Image 1: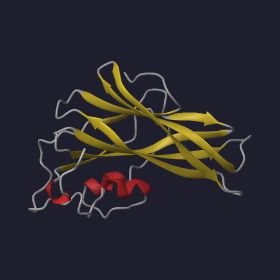
Image 2: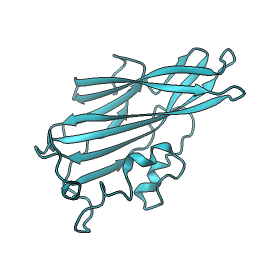
Image 3: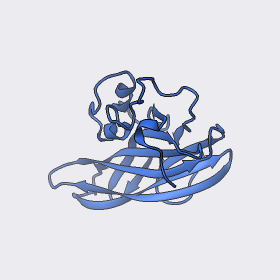
Image 4: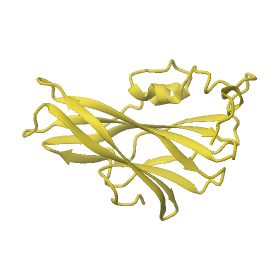
Length: 193
């Protein structure tokens, strides 16, 4: 499918707070972007929003179209953190960006940023963590994608950040009936409540 020229796209940029399931205090640096603060205020996902780029600046100087639909992104219950080889891995930030396509469907890019902490039995090294992205409508899962996030904990360090962006989620036009869920671990898992 072909996209319209960038100057004709009608973007909707949205920011999300961390899941209520997240244990511990997490500051969402991306929220600063929604308040007009300079992009990149501490989060590697700052670039996902495209603040200041041609992709998010309307051609006529208008703001984003208020009626455009962008599905909310939620962290699935019980999927905000997992143990992996002596390390505790958790989601710390999520963000989304929505672009309306020619057929009025919505292309959604979802970014997940996480933190891996070494436990008593953990050690430095490289490992992969599966991150699941699901489009849901009510209680039905419409589509599922899994990406492996690469985590590298350097020698002498006790933690490392990781990021993964899923850029190909497409939802039908402006129905308001769809949500996107993210979680750590592959495949199934507990549904949000």
